Image 1 (cartoon, rainbow over the protein chains, first blue to last red):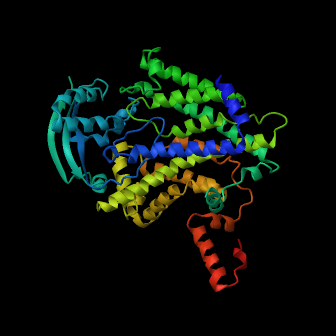
Image 2: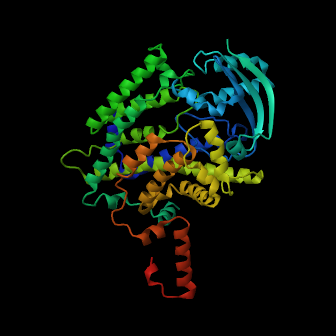
Amino acid sequence: MLLSVVDSLISLVSYPKLKIIAVTFLLTYFSIGMNNEYVDPKIYRTGIEWYPVFSWDLFSWVPNERSEYHMEIIQIGGITYNPPLAFRDTEEMFIDLGTSPTEYTPTIFKLGEAIIRDTSKIAEHSDYLASVFAGQRYRYRIYAVTFNPVDYWKHGTYIDKVFIGEFATK
Amino acid sequence: MFSNIKKYLRPVSLTKLAKESDILSRVRFCATAFYLAAPVVAFMFATNSLQNKLNFDPIWSFVWVTNWIYDVEDMVMTTKVLFILMAILAALYYRHRSVRILFFLALFQVHALESSYGYINHQWYTWLYTAGILVFLPDIWVRKVSRNSIRNSLLVLWTAYAMIFMTYFMAGVNKFVMVWLQWQAGEVHGLAMGAFLHQAAWWVPQLQQPAFMLGLVSEHPYWAWIFYVGLHFLQLFALWAVIRTSLFQVWIVLFIMFHIGTYLTMGISFTEHLLLLCAFGLASPFIWKQVTLKQQVMDLPVVGQLIELSVWLNNKYLKLKLSSFKF
């Protein structure tokens, strides 16, 4: 059925019409893709994506001074970290687990938002983070931070850093 | 109006290209290159560790699988095995449309699975679109192929390339929109000095991947600025290179270099997409065999138009002898 439809399209439709179909397809994709981003300023940059069409808005926003939430680990299993271990330095711990720390970054952000704005969601996000180190007991702190990305990359320094919560897995 | 637009754009003539003596073998080679690369990406996909991830949340196109297979690890393994089988099948029998459809469907499911962990995987998109468009290739593997079939197959390939290049074009448009918004907000924007260092310095700690050349970006901000601004324009004018195909090869090579550069400076790898550019991109029948530098300069966006304008002004008013710039 599908094969015969495709065959008919190719053999029966004239070349000029095929050209119109090709260009219309490209224009439609472009319109839907860009529409994701610009149709409503309220949804701008919220990650809305009409799968399988994408806006290709990749790395267009240049990070300036920004505020977000960071995690610092105090203890994993029997090891205590003093000074605490920044989550950005935990890559090696994830190699054996076959996952990546970046998968948990959005949840750290959501947990920070929950602490500040909606405490009913704290349990949901902290439970998810409990699975990070494959069941090992660990203790961590969440900070609301403001930083310049270049200074943070070079020196690990913050403009502002406020402790907002400490959690321990069971 | 359309004829005026066409006259201005001067797009590649597929009718003329279809008359070239070796075009059929070039079209066949291009399709072969794509489907031979398929098993390579299938094995690359098989080596990932999706089964270890915890946040499985199927998107709409993968939900149906969860009704048949309940264990996530089994789902991942089944998808991997089926994809490898389909990719090998496609590499061997891509001449049959039914096999191309099966490969596209397998890819659609692989992409859906990859995208079922909280965010959509973007680098598989170009593979998905290309495989979907190549389903429409006419049967060009018979003994006698008509000119019409060759022309239609060129159109199908052109659409596939235009789709890949349009992804860059859309990225370019988004970049310039964001430049405007950030410039209005008084922030460091994409065309500002140091923008690339801001970009890389934010992503590298996030991704925690080795970025071997980020130090160079920090030490040589002027060079980084030139490359980053150049990237903005490279992406913005990507579609131009599938219209004026004398630039096609240049753009493909620059895209490949851009992805290698992104890996070295930010640790972000687009491996599967890079393989697509290397195999399918460089095997394109739209790469001119005898392109001159003059032709490429004249076809460059903005630069070419400025030269054309200055020649026109000269012919109309100054009347200086510029014999090498006749149109």
